[in-house]
Length: 102
Image (cartoon, rainbow, N blue to C red; front, side):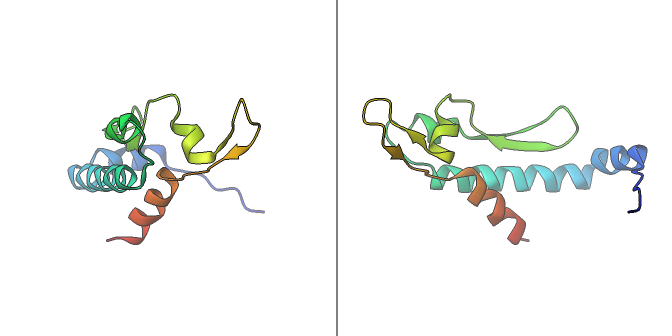
C-alpha cells in the first residue's frame, strides 16, 4: 500500500480562495434548505433549527443544534413502549442531493 502525503498549505490555500468559499457556502445553504424540507415536523423546532454556517477549519457545515435531531435522523427506541421509531432521515439525504447537483 502506498502512503499518501497531503499538502496542507495547498489545501488551506484552496479553502481560503474566495471562489471556493462561495461554492462551499452555496452548497451548505442548499443542503440546509433540502434538509429543512425533509425534516419531520411536529412543533417545527427541528425544521427551524437547521442552518448553514462556516466551520473552524475554513469549510462550511449545515445541521441542527436541537437535542432530538439525531434521534429523528437515525431513529430511537420509545422509552415507554420499547418500539423502535423512525428513522426519519433529513440530513443524509440532503448531503447526497447536493453531491449530485451542480
